[in-house]
Image (cartoon, rainbow, N blue to C red; front, side, top):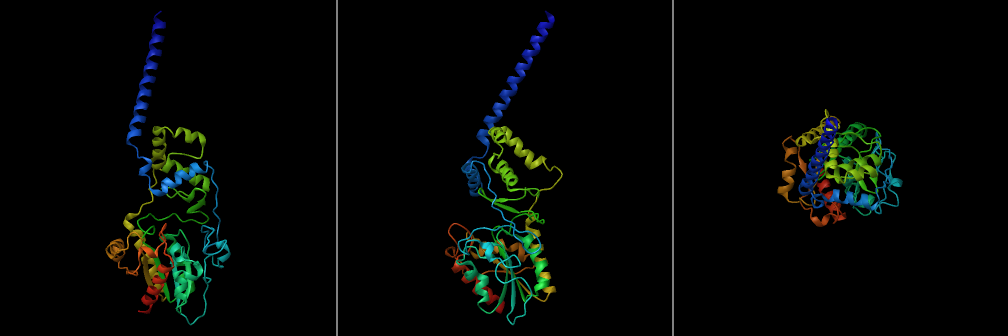
Amino acid sequence: MKEKLERNSALILILVNIVLISLLLLSAEIYLAYTEKTDNDQNWYEARFCKKAEDNNFQVTDRTGYRNGWDGIYKLDFQSPNIGNNIKQNYNRSGFTGNDLVPVKTEKPKILFIGDSHVFGVAANPILQNRFTSLVEEQGFYTYNAGIGGLDVVQYGLIAKRFIPELKPEHVALMLFLGNDIDRAPSPVAPRKHLYFQTNFDWVQGYDKYGHSFNSAQEAVDYWLKVRCGSSLDPATRFLMKSRLFRKGYQFYLDKIRYLWKEKLTNNGNAWIADTIKGIESLAEQNNASFELFVIPDKNSLTKEEIDDQVLFLRQRGLNPVYPEELEVSDYEKSGNHMLNSGHKKYADFIVRALSQ
């Protein structure tokens, strides 16, 4: 009898603990339901990314194509109505567009343009004729266009090291976009590692917050689904993540525990950006080239006060960023931040004036 009572007491105690734990978990779920951010708190990119995951039934199509760049593999072959059926057909032997990045003998002063999609000419129409580098060439210069969409300052420095000593240009023009070129951490550039994957979900960053590169588009999408959307490509994990408590715990693991002893990639007050640009300037001077730092304003920050505030960290390091003050919102595409033909024309004229002084 005594043993039976003890056994029943133990069972009751277990049941009470189960109930208490269940109530505790339920309370945590209710608390998180009222305190976690809503969908309205997502930025536009996160909201679009999460919606595309549902629209595509969580099936990833990898549209990323390897493309030979200068000393590594750099991103993407993609369709563009402004350049032809496939931009791949318009790459030169150097992996860029326009004149090959090889030494040439010419009486025209040579300019090496380094930058991202703005230098490449996205939103100019047609790109190869109306981007500002082509318009500068029409005014008596020989231009090298080392612009690829999605590059950042880390890669600008690598391009400079690779090409300035070889090409020996008279001018090096670094085109810094005052959008995603600043206020960001350095990217973990590595041979044959994608910084981005192009997928049916969107352009997806190819590395996590600690600089760990993903091996596939599926791995990258799954990570960012967990971090941004509280979801997953895996149905079982996606089901478990419907629990806010499980989702918070998993996201805490990904964000804090997974690489416990490794530091996150940080911006460090843009110091690394200024240091990299100073390195490019020094390299240009060592090779008897003039260095010009042109900044391309964000269309949402076009006043002189806003731009001067954004480039203050550059001037504090002795750099001299310049830009055309006549750019207007109408010079940019409506749904993006790239310059239209009118903006490219204004910028080309400004570059020619600046180089002539």
